[in-house]
Image (tube, rainbow, N blue to C red):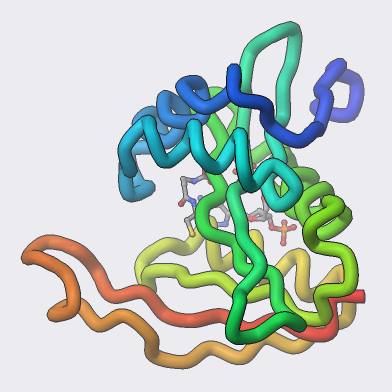
Length: 163
Ligand SMILES: CC(C)(COP(=O)(O)OP(=O)(O)OC[C@H]1O[C@@H](n2cnc3c(N)ncnc32)[C@H](O)[C@@H]1OP(=O)(O)O)[C@@H](O)C(=O)NCCC(=O)NCCS
């Protein structure tokens, strides 16, 4: 049981950037950005990011930002759980911690993008919306042809109210 394990949820520090990058690679699903980006997020955007750590090992993370054009929203950029810890409820706990993070304070809506084939991610956001009695609005966002070949479309999810 995950509840019995000593997992700590906390904002990342600079020392976590490379480990987040590794978890992103290990998911085999997420877009792998440069390690530089994860270092920058960990150092400068820590208020809107969360990591889950057990005995010094990074098991999962969420990265996010506040949206300059929609100050009511918190945007979740990526969420990833290491394959060995998936399906145990860690994704849900990470999202809860993310919505309670200092940078998410005052946000009324959660926004993110999800590919139509990503059933696990869709189920995760549906579960969080259900928990909070929030409504999900899905609309087209990045089309496949916006990307270089080989990348699925990304649909926009708007989930509100989150508190
Ligand atoms: C998406 C991801 C973060 C979910 O984390 P997780 O710890 O495995 O998810 P949880 O165990 O907290 O489960 C959350 C919900 O999703 C459901 N779920 C989990 N894995 C699933 C799967 N493979 N297919 C369908 N539903 C799934 C669970 O049943 C649960 O729903 P419920 O509360 O209604 O029962 C994780 O699978 C992952 O890292 N995937 C690869 C990266 C990725 O796709 N990130 C999202 C990109 S937007």
